[in-house]
Length: 196
Length: 176
Image (cartoon, rainbow over all chains, first blue to last red; front, top):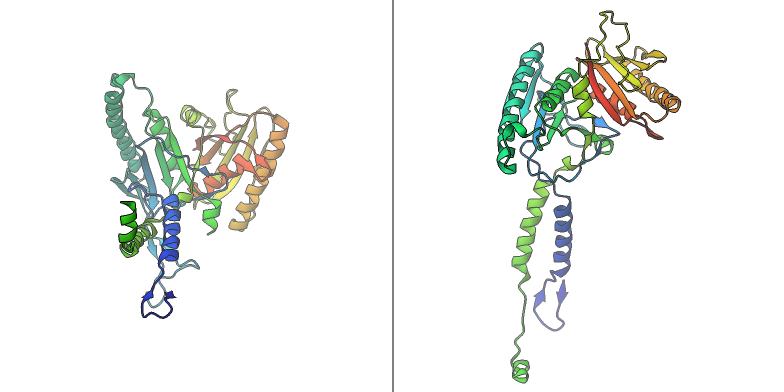
């Protein structure tokens, strides 16, 4: 705040504030990550010490397959949500255990324990349908016949919850590869993030 | 002309307030859209081999204690992670082509036990890596009902130790 001596006029010096705000904006602009609507925030990813930094995507398209388990917030005797030291709600697996496979943020396969086989059948069909659409699109873009396309360039990203069975994840990877998706990525929390 | 302008020069004030308003709006937008998921990492797997071999490397003998059929084109090391009925990691078997096999089992206390077994696995794989030399591939077979978290921890233990990479090219398979 600066006051002119001998004058009634008081001027608020906004310049340092503006500098500060600009710097904060700069920080957020650099670190901003527009979360795709395909990414489901309810997936609790496993932590991994060997997970690598995500490479900057050159592709404009990608398909995210989320595999998750339904969870509910843990409540205390008064019905209030119990939170951990970071203020995040502690969540337990909902009973009966219900799982979901969500394709590209749209198709939702809901199933319970014991129905994994049916769910995997539906998932295989969904991957096959996706592959057909993408193959057609790629053939138009590259001006080649559909049957000449051996590899689909759109990457598949698999985000599986810690409580999902290995036997649900592997068949999806194999099916995706069988349908011609040459890039399949698994996602995990980096250990630094998991420790927060 | 220039002289005139100097004479008539009015006091120019730049109105900072609307700009500041706009910056605050931008700041609010970025604060709200900031998401820590940027710290997600990708976990590489050897996809082509996974596709080729998935299901091929199954033991033909129904005896659950039998070792997996290890064919000559497979990597030297096969790690088999078995799950207990509740899906938690129960034991890990290490098979070395043309060599030994051993089973690592945790003590009854599950949490510390699985940590111990994974540390032991990494230590053994370090020794095996020294013996077999350059092959940086390994097959990880796991029970279908193994929890994904435990499967990922086994894969982590196979990929790298604290002193450096072990078998970074993993091929995934199922134990049925």
